[in-house]
Length: 137
Image 1 (cartoon, helix red, strand yellow):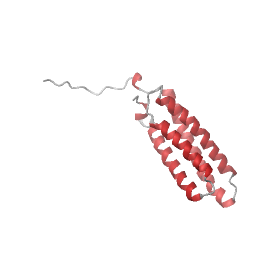
Image 2: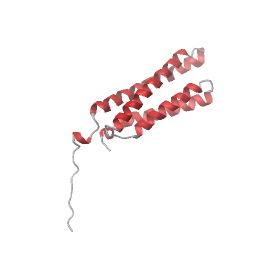
Image 3: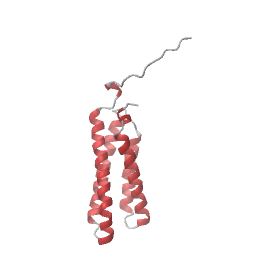
Image 4: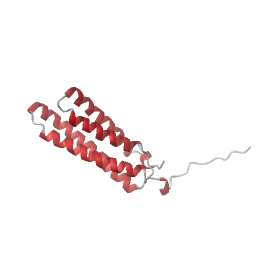
């Protein structure tokens, strides 16, 4: 029997997620990470000064960006034939963000859910800027 050796082929443009969709998702993920950093930086002010308005507004931005991120991640996944887990991570970010909003009086719950938010967004951020994000499944 003879075995055929195949060399790894370079990815063709048809083997990749549309670059416009992927770029839009990357922008949304970076915006989500930035909004979370701003909200976290305003948390100390909310606790120390008792002025939580700016922290709450930053949290609202986190929710809005999470919705945009979900839509873009679904577009990358379904028509773009990319990875599906970032869409699920976007939904998790939105749900955990809502839990953050509801539990703002209970720091014992509010702080750990904030840590979960950071972990999720870092995972999606690393994936979005990796070469594997552009590969179709």
